[in-house]
Length: 466
Image (cartoon, rainbow, N blue to C red; front, side, top):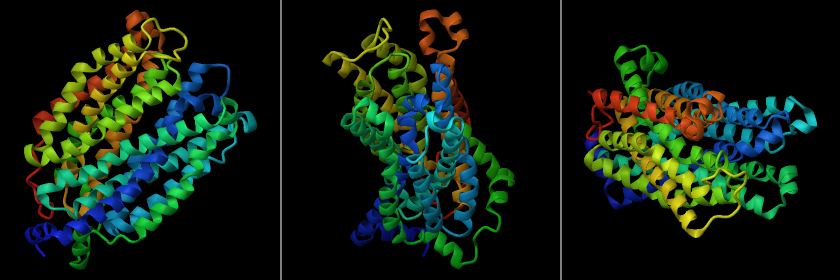
């Protein structure tokens, strides 16, 4: 079946129903994997005291954020390893392997001994499991986005793939909800002793549900056709990164799209959560409520901008999000300080209704930027690379941009904000020093993307991109 007839078939009611089953099945599994991956991020500040040597709160916090970042550090390796498997063997098989790896490594964190029990072995085990999480996620996202994109009509690819994009934010939201419930049910002492383990152990249940859903999925039709015709890539790594033309596309995708997307995503959600708790010193219940509420109202806009990109293009929406972020981050975070803790007192346990609404709106604005860069990007990446090497080629720039540039943002921004140089240079404005990093990366993406990215929205993905 050629690309045109495939897309026409997808518009019929029967095909539409089957298409939604594909999207929901792929999205459900990816949602649970993001939940697993972001549990640690939601508890990064709490884990500083639990898994690292006592006596230096700043060092423990940075060590915990570094452990959070370690999972991002190996995501590109997971993209290479599992991307190659996905291009050689198939999308579905790779889904199952990454899912089991993620589910088990997350659940085992719930059994870990703490620093008080086994000393330095505790952070060693924690980092090891965090690395396994990163490897698994490195292979999951590219497969899910590719799988959905290879089922859907070309004219609605941005709309349909944006459902996969919502799973990252929804996974973060789910992790906040489960952790918040546990911290509410248990006392502070009980949560520190055993309550924090429950969200991780819940991964056993999520893994079982995910496997049940994913086992029933069929192989991507484009890959199945490629395999039946004997046109599967013999060496997807060489074709992706040795071939000069494809290597150039990988680099453009990285610096012209995914790097900016990564820092906008993690600034608007994780760094906002970190900033509210440190240095603004809000009680965790306030910080979780503010960010969770903004996520609820902001997530539908990921679908909106994904769908909009089918009409106006991927490039202009993604770059507009980066531009708005670079221009407004400093005043937005200054507004957060004025509303939450203008005098930077040691602890804030209550806020007025006006302050809460104002803070939710500020984080919501950042979520709009997230939606602008994140909604269209899956469609953009799958359209950029050929079917035979799509899994490998799109996964690496995504996980370098999202994982390295974005994933290390909380660590880099917090380290910059708390440094002696920052205090000496900026004085009272030192708490905004961490924003220099995402602003610079957004500017880099604007320059590279604005000059080198070619619009992809009208491209049929079963034909080479020119």
